[in-house]
Length: 320
Ligand SMILES: [Zn+2]
Image (cartoon, rainbow, N blue to C red; front, side, top):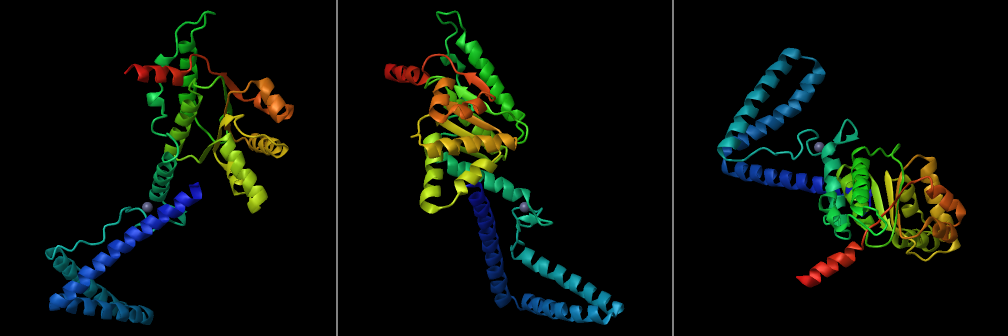
């Protein structure tokens, strides 16, 4: 699901919920009008007065207008009392700010922003482990405190973990730096990346995440088969683009130039990108051309170290 689709869905949900409330209310009014003649009479008088009021307002007779308005207020009060005694509540809006229209002064109301965000996260969670890959469950205990060459991976990885948390807290789609996570598989690159994605989505940022083979594959088939550029444009314009597992995709000259154009355009417009890869900088230069590598060396590069967590978790599981 795209961000646009989540907004359409949010508006649609709000419209349907309001329509249902209105229909329920109207049905209750209709029923009461049939059963209660006094209530039916008030309704009739109110609608007559409403029509007369418009004519009187045009005529400019302010004394008559005031009298009619008083009469209407009294009738409305009487009507509300009957409704209350019958246990029929007025339509209760889910959002009092926009009265469930979704707009305030022509601007999208916060209730729609919130609802769209939830819809998007829910839809993405169906295909991404957004709940299991969060900062809260990133376990630094999997990293050893000592290696043969005297390095402390846990201390080192704690530094990267803290940097990622701060990155999210201070995130600014116009100012934040781009990140490049390198290192072997199973060292937590995807987990930390998804933690960033998950937090920023919850904060309402427009984040696009995808494994390189999915992202590039979709853009390639859009370009050649459907002659559109929707996925490409979305990747260029989003607040944060996250490319996971760079190097896992099939590389063609088209993919090489596509990848360069994406990162170059985002760099020029000051938009950050986060990339995960098992490749070294030398391999990136060979695979995607040196001009791509020359862009990526400007990213904040972090090399993940430690033991393969997936292997450690598999061993733990097999012991249970
Ligand atoms: Zn609202």
